[in-house]
Length: 410
Image (cartoon, rainbow, N blue to C red; front, side, top):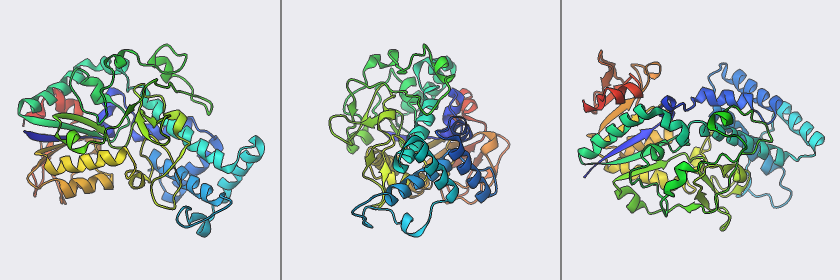
Protein backbone atom coordinates (compact mmCIF):
# COMPACT_ATOMS: atom_id res chain seq x y z
CA UNK A 1 0.00 0.00 0.00
CA UNK A 2 0.97 3.62 -0.52
CA UNK A 3 1.19 6.04 2.41
CA UNK A 4 -0.14 9.59 2.84
CA UNK A 5 1.04 11.78 5.72
CA UNK A 6 -1.31 14.62 6.74
CA UNK A 7 0.18 17.28 9.02
CA UNK A 8 -2.35 19.51 10.80
CA UNK A 9 -1.39 22.96 12.09
CA UNK A 10 -3.27 25.56 14.13
CA UNK A 11 -5.11 26.80 11.03
CA UNK A 12 -6.78 23.43 10.54
CA UNK A 13 -8.89 23.70 13.71
CA UNK A 14 -10.15 27.24 13.09
CA UNK A 15 -13.19 26.17 10.97
CA UNK A 16 -14.29 24.10 14.02
CA UNK A 17 -13.93 27.22 16.26
CA UNK A 18 -10.37 26.39 17.21
CA UNK A 19 -8.34 29.35 18.52
CA UNK A 20 -5.70 31.24 16.59
CA UNK A 21 -2.34 32.05 18.16
CA UNK A 22 -3.51 35.61 18.76
CA UNK A 23 -6.68 34.36 20.42
CA UNK A 24 -4.66 32.32 22.93
CA UNK A 25 -2.44 35.28 23.78
CA UNK A 26 -5.50 37.46 24.38
CA UNK A 27 -6.93 34.77 26.61
CA UNK A 28 -3.78 34.75 28.73
CA UNK A 29 -4.08 38.54 29.04
CA UNK A 30 -7.74 38.30 30.07
CA UNK A 31 -7.32 35.50 32.63
CA UNK A 32 -3.85 35.96 34.15
CA UNK A 33 -2.66 34.43 37.40
CA UNK A 34 -1.27 37.84 38.30
CA UNK A 35 -2.32 40.74 36.05
CA UNK A 36 0.57 43.00 37.07
CA UNK A 37 3.07 40.21 36.37
CA UNK A 38 1.53 39.33 32.98
CA UNK A 39 1.20 42.94 31.86
CA UNK A 40 4.83 43.56 32.79
CA UNK A 41 6.10 40.63 30.71
CA UNK A 42 3.93 41.53 27.71
CA UNK A 43 5.13 45.12 27.83
CA UNK A 44 8.79 44.13 28.10
CA UNK A 45 8.45 41.75 25.15
CA UNK A 46 6.69 44.42 23.09
CA UNK A 47 9.37 46.98 23.90
CA UNK A 48 12.18 44.54 23.17
CA UNK A 49 10.85 43.39 19.81
CA UNK A 50 9.56 46.88 19.01
CA UNK A 51 6.28 45.43 17.78
CA UNK A 52 3.15 43.61 18.85
CA UNK A 53 4.17 40.56 16.84
CA UNK A 54 4.55 38.23 19.80
CA UNK A 55 2.43 35.18 20.48
CA UNK A 56 1.38 32.99 23.38
CA UNK A 57 4.42 30.76 22.92
CA UNK A 58 6.76 33.71 23.38
CA UNK A 59 4.96 34.57 26.61
CA UNK A 60 5.16 30.98 27.91
CA UNK A 61 8.84 30.82 26.95
CA UNK A 62 9.39 33.72 29.35
CA UNK A 63 7.52 31.92 32.13
CA UNK A 64 9.52 28.72 31.59
CA UNK A 65 12.81 30.63 31.57
CA UNK A 66 11.87 32.42 34.79
CA UNK A 67 10.82 29.13 36.35
CA UNK A 68 14.14 27.56 35.39
CA UNK A 69 16.01 30.58 36.76
CA UNK A 70 14.14 30.66 40.07
CA UNK A 71 14.27 26.91 40.66
CA UNK A 72 18.04 26.90 40.16
CA UNK A 73 18.62 30.10 42.16
CA UNK A 74 16.62 29.00 45.20
CA UNK A 75 18.07 25.52 45.64
CA UNK A 76 19.92 25.51 48.97
CA UNK A 77 22.28 22.58 48.78
CA UNK A 78 24.08 20.55 46.16
CA UNK A 79 24.33 23.08 43.33
CA UNK A 80 25.89 21.41 40.31
CA UNK A 81 26.20 22.34 36.62
CA UNK A 82 24.77 18.91 35.86
CA UNK A 83 21.47 19.66 37.57
CA UNK A 84 21.12 23.41 37.85
CA UNK A 85 20.77 26.06 35.20
CA UNK A 86 23.71 28.41 34.82
CA UNK A 87 21.36 31.35 34.21
CA UNK A 88 21.40 32.62 37.83
CA UNK A 89 25.23 32.52 37.88
CA UNK A 90 25.53 34.82 34.85
CA UNK A 91 22.32 36.83 34.48
CA UNK A 92 20.08 38.62 36.92
CA UNK A 93 16.29 38.60 36.79
CA UNK A 94 14.66 41.88 35.78
CA UNK A 95 14.19 44.03 38.86
CA UNK A 96 10.54 44.84 38.08
CA UNK A 97 9.60 41.17 37.82
CA UNK A 98 11.60 40.34 40.93
CA UNK A 99 9.74 43.02 42.90
CA UNK A 100 6.37 41.63 41.76
CA UNK A 101 7.34 38.12 42.83
CA UNK A 102 8.76 39.33 46.16
CA UNK A 103 5.63 41.37 46.87
CA UNK A 104 3.47 38.30 46.28
CA UNK A 105 5.75 36.29 48.55
CA UNK A 106 5.37 38.74 51.41
CA UNK A 107 1.63 39.31 50.89
CA UNK A 108 0.47 35.73 50.37
CA UNK A 109 3.28 33.86 52.10
CA UNK A 110 4.10 32.01 48.87
CA UNK A 111 7.69 31.21 47.95
CA UNK A 112 9.23 32.24 44.64
CA UNK A 113 9.24 28.61 43.51
CA UNK A 114 5.55 28.08 44.28
CA UNK A 115 4.61 31.40 42.71
CA UNK A 116 6.29 30.77 39.36
CA UNK A 117 5.07 27.15 39.31
CA UNK A 118 1.52 28.39 39.86
CA UNK A 119 1.91 30.94 37.07
CA UNK A 120 2.97 28.20 34.66
CA UNK A 121 0.24 25.85 35.86
CA UNK A 122 -2.45 28.50 35.46
CA UNK A 123 -1.12 29.55 32.03
CA UNK A 124 -1.12 26.04 30.55
CA UNK A 125 -4.54 25.31 32.07
CA UNK A 126 -6.01 28.52 30.66
CA UNK A 127 -4.92 27.46 27.17
CA UNK A 128 -6.28 23.94 27.52
CA UNK A 129 -9.57 25.19 28.93
CA UNK A 130 -10.01 27.10 25.65
CA UNK A 131 -9.34 23.89 23.70
CA UNK A 132 -12.24 22.17 25.49
CA UNK A 133 -14.63 24.72 23.96
CA UNK A 134 -14.33 23.11 20.51
CA UNK A 135 -12.66 19.78 21.22
CA UNK A 136 -15.75 17.87 22.30
CA UNK A 137 -18.51 15.85 20.59
CA UNK A 138 -21.21 18.43 21.33
CA UNK A 139 -19.37 21.13 19.40
CA UNK A 140 -17.86 19.01 16.61
CA UNK A 141 -21.21 17.49 15.65
CA UNK A 142 -22.46 20.99 14.79
CA UNK A 143 -20.16 20.89 11.75
CA UNK A 144 -21.59 17.80 10.09
CA UNK A 145 -21.09 19.08 6.52
CA UNK A 146 -17.45 19.98 7.15
CA UNK A 147 -16.90 16.65 8.89
CA UNK A 148 -18.35 14.78 5.91
CA UNK A 149 -16.09 16.68 3.50
CA UNK A 150 -13.07 15.63 5.55
CA UNK A 151 -14.29 12.02 5.68
CA UNK A 152 -14.77 12.06 1.89
CA UNK A 153 -11.19 13.30 1.49
CA UNK A 154 -9.80 10.49 3.65
CA UNK A 155 -11.97 7.87 1.95
CA UNK A 156 -10.69 9.05 -1.43
CA UNK A 157 -7.16 8.28 -0.22
CA UNK A 158 -8.16 4.92 1.22
CA UNK A 159 -9.95 4.12 -2.04
CA UNK A 160 -6.68 4.77 -3.86
CA UNK A 161 -4.89 2.25 -1.64
CA UNK A 162 -3.26 4.75 0.71
CA UNK A 163 -2.51 4.28 4.37
CA UNK A 164 -3.52 7.53 6.12
CA UNK A 165 -1.26 8.96 8.83
CA UNK A 166 -2.51 12.05 10.69
CA UNK A 167 -0.11 14.15 12.78
CA UNK A 168 -1.18 17.37 14.49
CA UNK A 169 0.53 20.20 16.34
CA UNK A 170 -2.79 21.02 18.02
CA UNK A 171 -3.82 19.91 21.50
CA UNK A 172 -7.17 18.38 20.49
CA UNK A 173 -8.63 15.10 19.23
CA UNK A 174 -10.67 16.46 16.33
CA UNK A 175 -9.64 13.59 14.04
CA UNK A 176 -10.54 10.76 16.48
CA UNK A 177 -13.86 12.45 17.25
CA UNK A 178 -14.76 12.90 13.57
CA UNK A 179 -13.60 9.39 12.62
CA UNK A 180 -15.02 7.66 15.70
CA UNK A 181 -16.57 4.93 13.54
CA UNK A 182 -13.19 4.02 12.05
CA UNK A 183 -10.45 1.86 13.53
CA UNK A 184 -7.86 4.49 14.40
CA UNK A 185 -4.45 3.77 15.95
CA UNK A 186 -3.49 6.46 18.49
CA UNK A 187 -0.43 4.71 19.88
CA UNK A 188 -2.28 3.50 22.99
CA UNK A 189 -2.13 0.09 24.68
CA UNK A 190 -5.90 -0.33 24.33
CA UNK A 191 -8.78 1.28 22.52
CA UNK A 192 -10.63 4.20 24.06
CA UNK A 193 -14.00 3.06 25.42
CA UNK A 194 -16.60 3.48 22.65
CA UNK A 195 -19.06 5.20 25.00
CA UNK A 196 -16.54 7.86 25.94
CA UNK A 197 -18.03 10.22 23.34
CA UNK A 198 -21.36 10.14 25.12
CA UNK A 199 -19.99 10.70 28.62
CA UNK A 200 -17.99 13.87 28.24
CA UNK A 201 -17.41 15.30 31.72
CA UNK A 202 -16.30 18.88 32.22
CA UNK A 203 -15.70 18.33 35.91
CA UNK A 204 -17.64 21.52 36.70
CA UNK A 205 -21.18 22.48 37.66
CA UNK A 206 -21.91 23.82 34.18
CA UNK A 207 -24.58 22.05 32.17
CA UNK A 208 -23.14 22.50 28.67
CA UNK A 209 -20.06 23.39 26.67
CA UNK A 210 -21.52 26.82 25.95
CA UNK A 211 -21.91 27.53 29.68
CA UNK A 212 -18.38 26.33 30.32
CA UNK A 213 -16.90 28.61 27.66
CA UNK A 214 -18.58 31.62 29.29
CA UNK A 215 -16.89 30.95 32.63
CA UNK A 216 -14.49 33.61 33.80
CA UNK A 217 -11.26 31.78 34.49
CA UNK A 218 -9.60 32.87 37.73
CA UNK A 219 -6.44 31.66 39.47
CA UNK A 220 -8.66 29.42 41.57
CA UNK A 221 -10.59 27.85 38.71
CA UNK A 222 -10.20 24.07 38.78
CA UNK A 223 -11.25 21.92 35.85
CA UNK A 224 -10.36 18.33 36.49
CA UNK A 225 -12.12 15.02 36.37
CA UNK A 226 -10.01 12.01 37.23
CA UNK A 227 -10.60 8.98 35.03
CA UNK A 228 -10.93 5.74 36.99
CA UNK A 229 -8.73 3.94 34.43
CA UNK A 230 -6.16 5.85 32.40
CA UNK A 231 -4.68 4.20 29.32
CA UNK A 232 -0.96 3.58 28.81
CA UNK A 233 0.91 4.60 25.69
CA UNK A 234 2.08 1.56 23.77
CA UNK A 235 5.38 2.76 22.27
CA UNK A 236 5.35 0.12 19.54
CA UNK A 237 6.88 2.05 16.67
CA UNK A 238 6.72 -0.66 13.99
CA UNK A 239 3.06 -1.44 14.71
CA UNK A 240 2.05 2.21 14.76
CA UNK A 241 3.85 3.11 11.52
CA UNK A 242 2.53 0.03 9.69
CA UNK A 243 -1.10 0.66 10.70
CA UNK A 244 -3.53 1.68 7.97
CA UNK A 245 -5.04 4.66 9.81
CA UNK A 246 -3.31 6.50 12.66
CA UNK A 247 -3.28 9.79 14.56
CA UNK A 248 -0.81 11.39 16.97
CA UNK A 249 -0.52 14.74 18.76
CA UNK A 250 3.09 15.77 18.16
CA UNK A 251 2.91 18.62 20.68
CA UNK A 252 0.79 16.77 23.23
CA UNK A 253 -2.84 17.26 24.19
CA UNK A 254 -5.19 17.94 27.07
CA UNK A 255 -5.65 14.16 27.42
CA UNK A 256 -2.16 13.56 28.83
CA UNK A 257 -1.50 13.35 32.56
CA UNK A 258 0.78 11.49 34.94
CA UNK A 259 0.06 8.02 36.25
CA UNK A 260 -0.96 7.68 39.89
CA UNK A 261 0.48 4.15 40.01
CA UNK A 262 3.94 4.69 38.51
CA UNK A 263 5.18 8.21 39.32
CA UNK A 264 6.05 10.48 36.42
CA UNK A 265 4.86 8.09 33.69
CA UNK A 266 2.66 9.91 31.15
CA UNK A 267 -0.67 8.25 30.44
CA UNK A 268 -3.79 9.01 28.42
CA UNK A 269 -6.96 10.14 30.24
CA UNK A 270 -10.12 9.76 28.10
CA UNK A 271 -11.95 12.62 29.83
CA UNK A 272 -9.19 15.06 28.92
CA UNK A 273 -9.48 17.03 32.16
CA UNK A 274 -6.72 15.54 34.30
CA UNK A 275 -3.95 17.88 33.17
CA UNK A 276 -4.56 20.51 35.87
CA UNK A 277 -3.41 18.19 38.68
CA UNK A 278 0.00 17.38 37.26
CA UNK A 279 1.43 20.51 35.64
CA UNK A 280 3.43 21.65 38.68
CA UNK A 281 5.24 18.31 39.14
CA UNK A 282 8.94 18.39 38.37
CA UNK A 283 10.10 15.87 35.74
CA UNK A 284 13.34 14.77 34.16
CA UNK A 285 13.89 15.98 30.65
CA UNK A 286 15.50 18.59 28.50
CA UNK A 287 19.07 19.64 29.13
CA UNK A 288 20.92 18.13 32.12
CA UNK A 289 20.92 21.45 33.96
CA UNK A 290 17.34 22.57 33.25
CA UNK A 291 14.46 22.10 35.68
CA UNK A 292 11.36 21.29 33.65
CA UNK A 293 7.91 21.06 35.15
CA UNK A 294 5.62 18.52 33.57
CA UNK A 295 3.32 19.88 30.89
CA UNK A 296 0.82 17.85 28.82
CA UNK A 297 1.64 20.07 25.85
CA UNK A 298 4.84 21.22 24.18
CA UNK A 299 4.78 24.98 23.97
CA UNK A 300 7.11 27.92 24.33
CA UNK A 301 10.73 27.56 23.27
CA UNK A 302 11.48 24.35 25.17
CA UNK A 303 10.05 22.16 22.40
CA UNK A 304 13.35 20.58 21.41
CA UNK A 305 14.05 19.74 25.05
CA UNK A 306 10.69 18.15 25.71
CA UNK A 307 10.54 16.07 22.54
CA UNK A 308 13.13 13.73 24.03
CA UNK A 309 10.70 12.73 26.78
CA UNK A 310 7.74 10.44 26.29
CA UNK A 311 5.23 10.33 24.76
CA UNK A 312 6.53 13.14 22.54
CA UNK A 313 9.67 11.28 21.50
CA UNK A 314 7.60 8.36 20.21
CA UNK A 315 5.43 10.67 18.12
CA UNK A 316 8.35 12.41 16.46
CA UNK A 317 10.13 9.13 15.74
CA UNK A 318 6.95 7.86 14.07
CA UNK A 319 6.55 11.13 12.15
CA UNK A 320 10.15 10.90 10.92
CA UNK A 321 9.68 7.33 9.73
CA UNK A 322 6.33 8.03 8.06
CA UNK A 323 7.81 11.05 6.26
CA UNK A 324 10.67 8.86 5.06
CA UNK A 325 8.33 6.18 3.70
CA UNK A 326 5.33 8.20 2.46
CA UNK A 327 4.19 8.73 -1.14
CA UNK A 328 2.14 11.87 -0.53
CA UNK A 329 2.34 14.69 2.00
CA UNK A 330 -0.42 17.14 2.95
CA UNK A 331 -0.21 20.07 5.34
CA UNK A 332 -3.49 21.62 6.51
CA UNK A 333 -3.14 25.00 8.21
CA UNK A 334 0.51 24.49 9.15
CA UNK A 335 2.63 27.66 9.01
CA UNK A 336 6.04 26.02 8.43
CA UNK A 337 7.45 28.06 11.32
CA UNK A 338 8.47 25.15 13.54
CA UNK A 339 12.17 24.47 12.83
CA UNK A 340 12.09 20.97 14.34
CA UNK A 341 9.19 19.77 12.18
CA UNK A 342 10.57 21.61 9.15
CA UNK A 343 13.90 19.86 9.54
CA UNK A 344 12.22 16.44 9.62
CA UNK A 345 10.26 17.25 6.47
CA UNK A 346 13.30 18.61 4.68
CA UNK A 347 15.52 15.70 5.71
CA UNK A 348 13.14 12.76 5.41
CA UNK A 349 10.68 13.64 2.67
CA UNK A 350 11.90 12.27 -0.64
CA UNK A 351 12.18 14.72 -3.54
CA UNK A 352 9.60 12.85 -5.64
CA UNK A 353 6.89 13.01 -2.96
CA UNK A 354 3.98 15.28 -3.89
CA UNK A 355 3.39 17.93 -1.22
CA UNK A 356 0.09 19.82 -0.93
CA UNK A 357 -0.03 22.84 1.39
CA UNK A 358 -3.45 24.24 2.25
CA UNK A 359 -3.38 27.74 3.75
CA UNK A 360 -5.69 30.73 4.05
CA UNK A 361 -5.46 33.76 1.78
CA UNK A 362 -4.02 36.07 4.40
CA UNK A 363 -1.25 33.64 5.33
CA UNK A 364 -0.01 33.11 1.79
CA UNK A 365 2.78 35.05 0.17
CA UNK A 366 4.44 34.42 -3.16
CA UNK A 367 7.78 34.20 -1.38
CA UNK A 368 6.60 31.56 1.10
CA UNK A 369 9.56 29.42 2.11
CA UNK A 370 8.78 25.75 2.48
CA UNK A 371 11.21 23.19 3.92
CA UNK A 372 11.72 21.61 0.51
CA UNK A 373 14.75 23.53 -0.73
CA UNK A 374 12.37 26.02 -2.36
CA UNK A 375 13.29 29.66 -2.74
CA UNK A 376 10.30 30.92 -4.63
CA UNK A 377 6.74 29.88 -5.44
CA UNK A 378 5.02 31.51 -8.41
CA UNK A 379 1.36 32.28 -7.75
CA UNK A 380 -1.19 31.11 -10.32
CA UNK A 381 -4.69 32.33 -11.05
CA UNK A 382 -6.40 29.10 -10.01
CA UNK A 383 -5.39 29.47 -6.36
CA UNK A 384 -2.42 27.18 -6.06
CA UNK A 385 1.27 27.26 -6.83
CA UNK A 386 3.88 24.80 -8.04
CA UNK A 387 7.48 24.70 -6.98
CA UNK A 388 10.44 24.44 -9.29
CA UNK A 389 12.29 21.51 -7.73
CA UNK A 390 9.50 19.36 -6.31
CA UNK A 391 5.85 18.64 -7.09
CA UNK A 392 4.43 21.06 -4.52
CA UNK A 393 1.01 22.69 -4.63
CA UNK A 394 0.10 25.55 -2.32
CA UNK A 395 -3.67 26.03 -2.14
CA UNK A 396 -4.35 29.48 -0.70
CA UNK A 397 -8.14 29.19 -0.71
CA UNK A 398 -8.56 27.75 2.78
CA UNK A 399 -9.27 24.31 4.20
CA UNK A 400 -13.06 24.49 3.92
CA UNK A 401 -12.93 25.40 0.23
CA UNK A 402 -10.25 22.79 -0.46
CA UNK A 403 -12.36 20.01 1.06
CA UNK A 404 -15.77 21.15 -0.18
CA UNK A 405 -14.66 21.60 -3.81
CA UNK A 406 -12.49 18.47 -3.64
CA UNK A 407 -9.48 20.34 -4.98
CA UNK A 408 -7.33 17.40 -3.91
CA UNK A 409 -8.66 15.48 -6.92
CA UNK A 410 -6.29 17.57 -9.04
